[in-house]
Length: 323
View 1: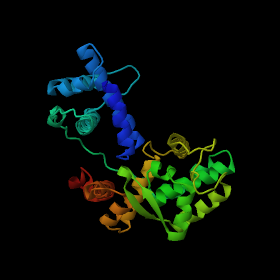
View 2: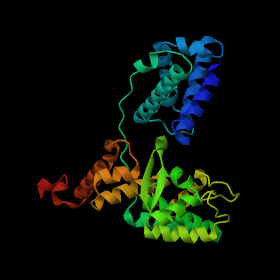
View 3: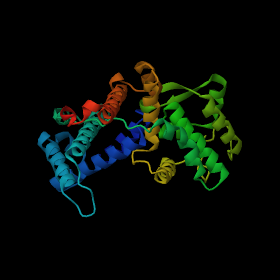
View 4: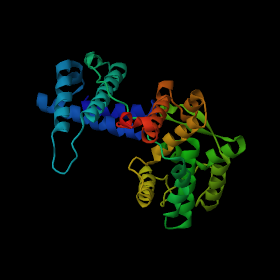
């Protein structure tokens, strides 16, 4: 079997069995395709399963070094890649290699310990950057008002209110069907399937419920199995369309680039924490597998408090001792 065929089977398995997001699938496909291209140049022919079985630790390190050199080489019209960003990319590529070779060992009988011997670089995880409460509350109305017709206005308003009100990922919100909302109306909670196909319960807030009810009255085909948020052609609304809508609102309001749909999820968690919610509760609502992931919001809040203190406290000034 050709290695590229095995790669396609691996990506299909990641989608169907592991519930990997499209973002992860796209990243892994890009990384592993480049890896197989590197092996093709290295061996002078298209790699097979046998080639993957004999790939050495030196081969893997040589590919990672090649990619890092390419990333750090300045290119005309492009921003230079920082070393920290390069380290995060290398970490993802190591993860992609390990996952691919574990799949090969389990499903193709290809045993190769080399990927497990790769060192994963330490990276600084960026702290969540939420929107201020005012902007987060205004996002749904503001984004909806920029649409050209009333149907799209009500759809976007309901969608972005849901993302902030429930702390959903954009893919989770767009993955809902009309029947999921009907069930939430009767139970008071949405059943959300997140990463790894893990299910969690998210309360349906009254304000969100009102917006969704109004949107349902505009929905072009509100039967149970239809997407809750359809695009103009009737299929499920594409995430890039929703991201573009928020990008337009962000520019109109003069907000920073980190004001994205995912920032509404960060805002949900941060504002819950600031309101006194327990970290374990926030972990459950976000669907985090590990509490350490949720604890990043504590660090973000500490950084925000320190920034406020430095700007406001008389003793925070470098010249405070001279006064």
